[in-house]
Length: 598
Image (cartoon, rainbow, N blue to C red; front, side):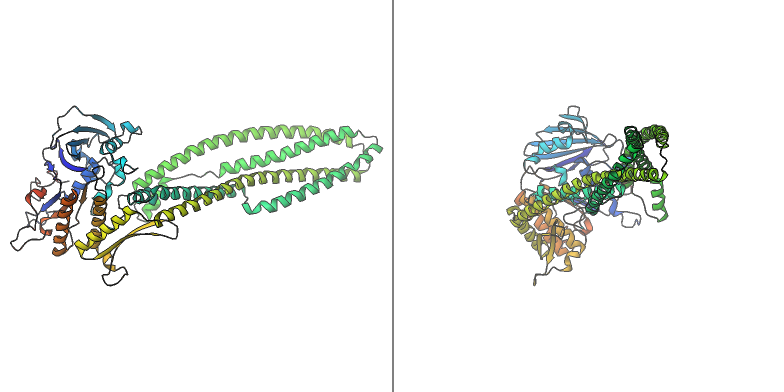
């Protein structure tokens, strides 16, 4: 897949036709006396953002089309892609309705569909969850990208559309969002390894962390921990033994009551019922207390307070973070409301039950006192009453212990699930290490190509390799070594060297994936800057050779002053047909990419 043409419905935007080999986006400074002239705002770097937009990147704040919407709202852009010989796809995307995508398949290049109404796909929703309506999925199928890699083309396109901010790291670009999980499995697959194992490891670790978090939250809320299990079991056995002893003492009062012609059956029934109701009263009060505590503990999130805090320390609170935080707060609020409704309903029901229990207890206590009033021996009655109260207290304690042990059972189940995940993680790590240690022919070939390219351009020895860090995560590295020793040198820290490491890595991928179902182009913005003329000449010679040998399209941006010149003062080895567009700083702005400043 190559870029064939980019054009617009606004005639101030000059049509850009790309050839199949080397393409130079050239910037010229015409008015050298104008100190206000901005040579870095001609549109060289903006073009790469436009291409990314046309490759169906979602439009977010920070993108020039989003930030300058008023100036671009009438613009509609078209990008013609060469899938293979005599097979082209044109993508139409407007700025105002940028989520509605049009696609047209055709057999000839250099078409103009500004007035076209007959599209093969019209108004496709950019983020549709229906595969056959999602333009990125459709384009992926048209390219046949899915035949060589299990990911969408957008997962890798950033390597081949490098802006000036994407040279700090070879593998993790500034445009990558999220943690390593979002890009490292795809990179591992691209380099010939089992990316699924890399992804699975991150997924399992996430599950383990979630189990850990849940255990800590439950231990805090229930006021117990896994270490309490043996202590609570021992305490439960001691309480049951004590209960049996007290129950036996109460039974010994039977003979005493019979001697005094007391109705044992009536006393037992009343005392049993009172005991049951006392237990129920205790449990209800405990439940009510727990429910009230849960209601009082609910957390309120206040985004304004957080925003104010950021302002007080003069730190900008990013809108994307705020949006993500707002979504989290909204989700938490909904969950909290549902939970509050449930807790309040449960609280009212418990209070009603408690009121009924207390009323019945009052009735039974009165009746019991009437029966026991016949007892003349106050000491015996006091002992009997003491044993009864002690028994109720012990039963309540046993009930509470039973609840805690049940909760510990739940904690134990979660802990066991976590341990099973840890065993699964160990197995995946073992498989992952085995996969990487077994090597990959593709990766070895990419390594060799990378080393060869760096040597040709920089006249330095570079290595591309991987390491497994202390967290058992794969780390890919690209560094320059000394020609005299194996130790890595600090030259890799030089900005121009970093750029060339990125350039050579991207080219090594394209050379080893020399397939029209994959990308057959690379756009490197500002890669020429800060290099010596000697290295620039090597760079251009190498690029031209790669384009011709592997049929790769290469696009680079450069100011005219940055291109090395021959002894005759001509731009070194740059042919006129290799300059796809020339941008300049004319006073009327006609020389800029869009024909106006913004």
